[in-house]
Structure formats: structure tokens, C-alpha cells
Image (cartoon, rainbow, N blue to C red; front, side):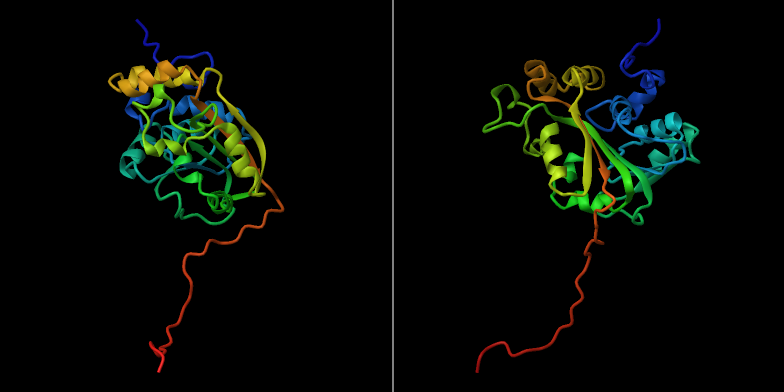
Amino acid sequence: MSDERFVSEKFPRSSKYHPDWIVAGVSGGANSLWLTEWLVGALELRPGMRVLDLGCGSGVSSVFLCREFGVPVWATDLWFGVAERLQRVRDAGVAEGVFPMHADARALPFAAEFFDAIVSIDSYPYYGTDDFYLGYLARLVKPGGQIGVAGAGMMREIEGAVPEHLRAWWTPDLWCLHSAAWWRRHWEKSGIVDIELADTMPDGWQRWLDWHRIIAPDNLAEIQALEADRGNYLGYVRFVGRRRADAVLEEPVVSVPTQYTKKPLLRG
């Protein structure tokens, strides 16, 4: 009997990958291949383009990008070990095209305008809600280059208290999740990118639920929250911006030069 886990006509590229390989690379609360395939549908990736996969976790999305689209990928993450990621890349036969990096999203070791595109799969809300962050990140992509994000989000913003059916699962860090409309406004006000897309995955809550039923069946709080919510608040969002050619981005200030001059402490 064939193993039909993670097979979906909505994600034909992802469906080619062995379910055991996908499960072995779990690094978050979503199927990163589904999200990557969905996001790339809104990007203009061409073979040879340099891509930053920011917050890549175990690197499954990076392998997918390299294999499916012929792009070299800098697989960058803070929480997941780079040695294990490198072994996964080697075993997938893409060691010449995927470069595992260990770095904080706020201290990235790349030159300005090094990348042709930047993607972030189910990690951006943990650092990208900062009003200054897009300006920092956009420096790394060439003018005209795209920045694309996909992951868990809200179908609409929560106004007031957390709804009763979500309270058993909700934790303070989940306030970083926002709607596609919120992200559109957040990026538009910067003037750094032109927003090309900000939308939600049809039945994204169901895909989220399908994933957890397979990889984390004991996570009853999240499963029950998704079952009760049925896409009212929870689902998947994506948004894509293109760096404006006229956007002037300054180098981030990492230190302020000072020189101490001794002065009297008190009057008289």
C-alpha cells in the first residue's frame, strides 16, 4: 500500500517528496514544502538567482528551492543546528547549491544587494513585526528584487480579548501573528517595497490541521483550537514585496563612536 501522507493535487511539486524525509525535517508548525510551493507561485525565480532562505529551520525548504527551481540558496537559521542541516543538504545531493548558515535574523553576515530574492517560510513574524526590520532586510536584496513570506497568520485581527475557543492554546508570543491586510499596511508605510501580493491560502486552516494530525497528534490544544476555529481566525498568509529602485537604505548603526572627556561631577 502506498503512503499518501502529504500528497495533494494543490502541491504537485511537494507531493513528489517522500513523507519520511518530510517528517524527519520537521522544524515548525507547518509543512514547509506546501508553504514554499505556494509562495513561489507568486515569485519570479530563475535558475542561478541567489536566494536567501531566512529562518529555514532544518533546511527542507532550501533543498526544495534548489532542486525544483535551480537556484543557489543560503539556508540561514538561528535555532536549528548547521551541522545537521549540512548533512541533510549533502544527502539530498544539493551540496553545491545550498549553503547552510548559522545566523540571527537581526545580524545577517551578507553584503548589501547580494541576493536576487529573499524568502521566509513560517518564521518572519517572530522578528519582522519591528518597524525597522524591513529596512534592514531589504538592503540585502537588489533593487527590483522580491521579498516573499508565507506562514501561519490570522484571517482577521483579534480585536479585544482572545476568543474563548482559542484560549487553551493561545500564548503571548502568538500576538506576533497577523493578517495579510496587516502585513500589507506594515510594509506599505515603509515606502521600501511595492506590495505585489498579500493574501490567504484557501482552506489554509485545514492544511494546518492536516499537518498537525500527522506530525504532532498529541498536540491536542492546537488541534482542538483549529477544529473549533475552522478558519475564522487561523490560517496561512503570504505577502510579497519588490524593493523599490528609488528606496534609499542606510547601513544599520551597530556602534556610535564616542570619546570620554572628564568633567566636574558636581557644581562648586
